[in-house]
Image 1 (cartoon, rainbow over the protein chains, first blue to last red):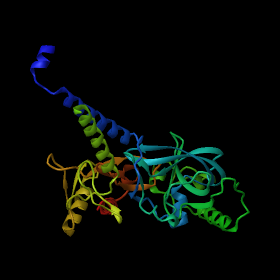
Image 2: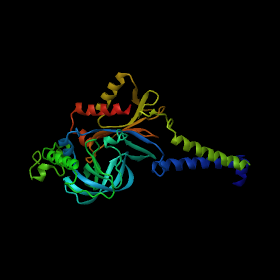
Image 3: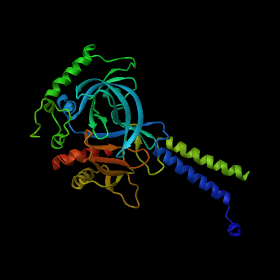
Length: 222
Length: 138
């Protein structure tokens, strides 16, 4: 075997160089894919067509399974689900407008690292759009849909679907202390009574926490 | 000395790849338009797509409509082209959208349609959604 190797006249040191380069390339590609390497820069190229006009509170609340005030405890990880990047948070619910969540939940915000690069929703560049990633320690009014099987709450992203209440980590929300927030909550509570449910939720009986069900009424005969 | 030369080549390669990954102008595979104004799947004036969707009629009609505008050529991917866009469906009730476009810095962008809502819509509604998302792609 050694004689064969000697006779082939191959410069094995160059083979080693090429092998190292290939190995490093593969390692880099895998690291990017696993988001172990996070490259600088942000892309704002993610966009979607919402299932309703969420500038209308009745449609926003109707499309949400839960609407609530929550403090973001911590950002836990970046995940990619069905090829779409999300950022996961642990949040503590302080007040419910639709639904009855108690304690801590997992909240997912569309946008996060994918193949080593931060991909955010188009519109997140402007803070006033309320589409940027959540900040740890901040308290928000949020609207989300609930993946019951995995017990994860996916935020609805729209300028009207979120309100930053406080970015002070020591702030503890109490209803009745802030007129602006209270007015918004009251508006959403009224909208809840006249909510417009997505047809798909009615058909598939996934109108969780809908107002009619809360009152014990049937929804479209179900 | 020869050993140091080879080591230098390895480190030079690593440095170039790192710089290339950080640079905003080019990609290791294919070339996307990447400008401060936005990111899209247009590659040398066309979008080569792969993958599949059960809403193929709506997709076909939307592609035809955009191609008729003449701004960009949207065509299926083949062995001679780089796949700029991957089409796919999901069936996720926990998402609040009909369809979504996701830009990928390194690889193919994706256009995903949510069957949970799409199935309940009319043909016209579905075609509108697909056409709208295709607009975001370029």
